[in-house]
Amino acid sequence: MTAADASNTMKKIGAAIVPVTPFRQNCTLLWCTRTLRAAVIDPGGDLDRVRAAITETKIKVEKIWLTHGHIDHAGGAAELKDDLGVTIEGPHRADKFLLDRLPASGLKFGMHGVRVAAADRWLDDGDRVEIGDLAFDVLHCPGHSPGSVVFLNQDDRFAIVGDVLFRGSVGRTDIVGGDHAALMASIRNKLLPLGDDVAFICGHGPGSTIGRERTSNPFLR
Ligand SMILES: [Zn+2]
Ligand SMILES: [Zn+2]
Image (cartoon, rainbow, N blue to C red; front, side, top):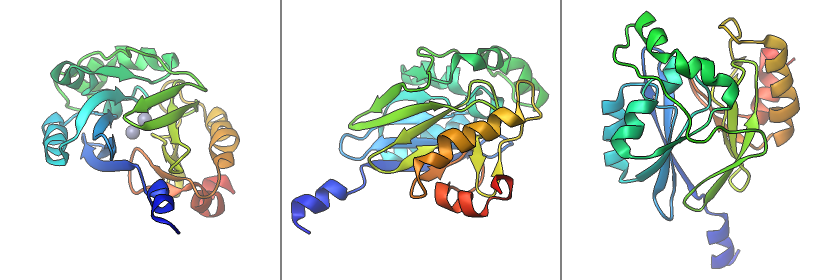
């Protein structure tokens, strides 16, 4: 392999996970390793820890991306947006009702001062979001919530799947707006066809690959 080939295949994505909220949600800092331009995905809360991680990684946050509207993913979005002067992209508009009720959901779980969040840009299936040199395709994957989206980077075969799919499990559908049949359709029709080599970070717990889940996830048998 020549030097040029080697540099073409070098990973362009940097990622760091900050577990936030009582739900230990995987708030993910995602950046372009060439430009250090970054997105914070699902800043559910514990923003002091998120800010510390941003400082430590020396990234330049330009966007907040939301996979869906649940409190553990979106609870800190409005405050962080104002702090950093950035825009919020996602989720799909079908989760607006969840973003509107964030303060009430927060109180239920002892999270005070949570503000209503709103997307500056609602996302739909087939949309594209960008950060630095990186482009991510948006997949609308309803079921866990009606407006859940997945972010896919084709070049690095990498995805952020929120609470749609987990290592060894799938998203719960007993929360208002959940729909198990729709969730399974999203996983079978949108995620599994991406290919076994696609690695992902999910909303809770360790990440995995599509192949590992296709062959070993008991919910996909
Ligand atoms: Zn959720
Ligand atoms: Zn969650």
